[in-house]
Amino acid sequence: MRVDSLPGALERACQVLAGRAVVALTGAGLSTDSGIPDYRGPGSPRATPMTFGEFRSGEAARRRYWARSHVGWARMRAAEPNAGHRALVELERAGAVRGLITQNVDGLHRAAGQRSVIDLHGRLADVVCLDCRGRGSRAELQLRLAELNPGFAEAHGAGVASNPDGDAALESVDGFRVAPCTDCGGTLKPDVVFFGENVPPGRVALAYGMVESLVPEDGRTGALLVAGSSLTVQSGLRFVRRAHQRDIPVVIVNRGPTRGDEFAVVKVDGGCSEVLGALASTL
Image (cartoon, rainbow, N blue to C red):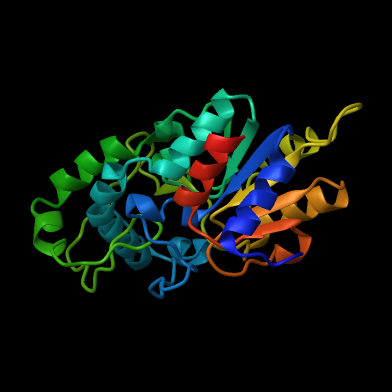
């Protein structure tokens, strides 16, 4: 991978992507301009997400999760798409981006108007029961939690930092009451992939299929555009590796190094809003 200045790398990215069908793979760095912090970007605060095993370990862990989520959810759902999200919508409408795989759970791609989206890790806006597998709305659950815990968010939310997954960094969750499933009384969980959980195989297969579609029977091979992901976890890196194996050129836009840099033909070390906006105005 050649290392260029930002203007030089951006020019090379345009040259690689021009005239190709593009699939985008996005990560938390795309949403930072919407006020949602990420885990691994330069200057990101240290955060330790709850694992699936911890969530299943008992009532205390679930109380801690849902208390923090109750405070943080109001902030997360108030976030709006930024210039990077809107640039990807422009590229889709122009026919350049044919599909998008996101590791983000904030739902901002769909809110911006992106049509072909695979939510690889699920969405915080949805809730699932671990016992009966019934699904519901996080917004409805928020109302139930507010009724069970009147004044909790107002008393505990002031001055508390937000975490990347939409919860708040509360120190005390004493007295918080967790809402059960309304159908079976079971354990509710946000319908997202926790650390220690596997992405559903069918969803992975759809994402692989989207990448494989970039290899046409005839004509020019498409390109994979990675935006705002350090590719630290295998769930996203595997698609970069698959593209590299299939001789699909990979362009990475991210602040700081990524685990996929060795597979990229171009690496643009810059912010997603700025770089994707420039790509949208050029391609």
